[in-house]
Figure 1 (cartoon, chains in turn purple, red):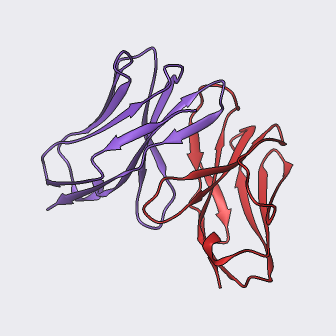
Figure 2 (cartoon, helix red, strand yellow):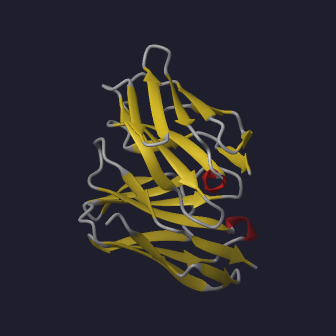
Figure 3 (cartoon, chains in turn cyan, blue):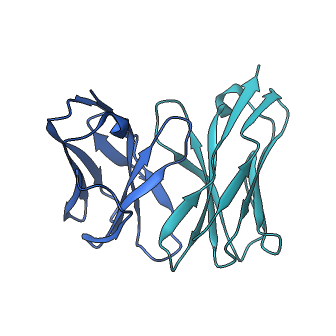
Length: 112
Length: 114
């Protein structure tokens, strides 16, 4: 199978600061890494993803980096806003398994 | 449009009841998923349907019975549940199974078993 570890479990930042969440995976065959944001009482929302043939991807204030050699990937949120407060999950996927393996989640609080 | 809809939003049922959860997507996706999510935990995969056929069952108890009547609909039939089955039940879909495709989640059904 696949084991995805996510750190930190909780993160508090001041509005305007950056937030970084890190995940590691165990199976080198994993080739797709999405990030989800889950607000209270809602389903997970796909916010950004990266494929194994890419090292970095950016979408406005959100970026994801992937280090295949070290088997870790990170979510970077710049200029954080209170509405970024949510639980963030990373996941890893490989074609052969057809399953998404989720990290344990990071509860991000942005303090106004 | 990347919308997956789920009904009902909330469901309270007794241990002897029979109820069903419904999920719908109109994105032309051929892979659909059921997940169970407990508070402060990641989603746990229950079932995967590919082209309306069950392809993965993660050893889910038989009191949960999935059904995929067509490519847009996914149901989860519930019978004789236990209080520990109380959770958020999430439906998701992706274009196909077995490849690198985005997976989109619905808002979930909050189930309480009394």
